[in-house]
Length: 248
Ligand code: SAH
Image (cartoon, helix red, strand yellow):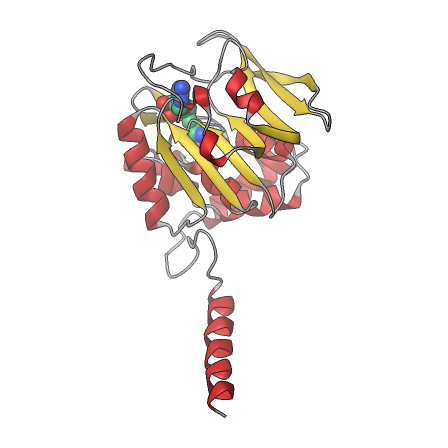
């Protein structure tokens, strides 16, 4: 009888959590969402109409509060079709590029993903709604601190952050099913290729700083063979190096 009561209690709590929609990232709970219409419009016009079909990506982009990841001065512009400044000379990517890169990773709820360039934390939040675990590295300490705060406030529990030079990846948690690099590098950092699992994919902007770069999709085959494919032209802030840093 006692066991039955305990089971019932747990079932009620579980059902309550389900109804409230408690999950990784709980933006939609008990918060006013003044930007619902703007976000819906962003997904339709900027993302769906441009050919992004992955339903998990569309759902995630339609759910994450992008306006929470920019400063107050940019809130009203958060859903516009462009990147925005996030301080320290860095930017949050244009919504379409976030959606495109996320779709290219071809990940699902069992995946573990490494991101280089946490920035505002927005891309990590979008991924966290699709995959199992997100590991994200930011080299600039104030950005690392701020994104940590935002992600914590919004309730994300499957995002793990690190303040370090992402060039080296995050060996302790490797291999990763997917790697996403949100800053441009002249070449693909070898440690990131190494930390990709067999059958995994990496999406990375390759090219010179502050010029047009190529968004490259890197695939590691079942035998460890590497293939690359240029997807489109992009313009990202550069991957910078902390030359005194070492591998994690
Ligand atoms: N994904 C971010 C966009 C970040 S912009 C978002 O959703 O907001 C690129 C970020 O990469 C910047 O914050 C920059 O500081 C960071 N970065 C540059 N070089 C890096 C490196 N070597 N390791 C980790 N982060 C780096």
